Image (tube, rainbow, N blue to C red; front, side):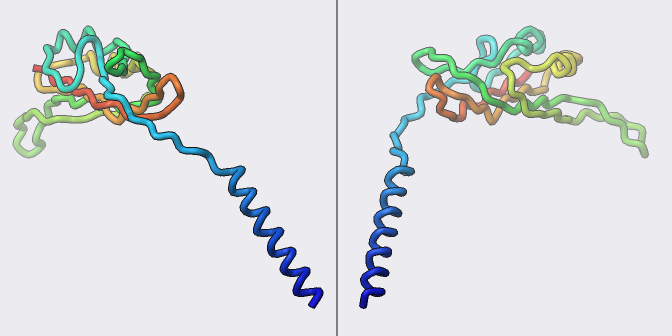
Length: 155
C-alpha cells in the first residue's frame, strides 16, 4: 500500500514537472502580415523589356528590395539566371543555328560579382534574359521572407 502511494506521488510530481517544462519552452507566436515587396534593378521592376545597352549599364547596380513605405530590406540570397543566345553548328550538315544557353548561380550580395558582370556584358543581345529569382530578404526586425522575381528581357 505504501508503495502504491509512493508511486502515485512520484507520478504526480513527474506530470507537474513535465507541464512546467512545457510552459517554459513554449514561445508565443505573433501573426505577421508580409508587406507587398518590390524587387528593383536601376529603375526596372517586375518583367520589363529593355535595350541591350540599358542592360549593360544597369547590370552592375545593386539589387534593391523595398516595400510600399519605401523601407529597404536586406538581401540574404537570390538566384540569378542569364539566358544567353549562342550559335551552334550541326556536325553532320555544317549548318549553324541559334539556341539558348543558361548560366545560373546563387548569390549572397546585392551586386553581381565582377566575373559574372564580365560574362554577362560580353555579348548582350536581343532575345536574351536576365532573371533574378528566389530572392530571400530580411526586414529590419530580422524576419525572413521572399521578394518577387525580376525578369529583364532584351529587345
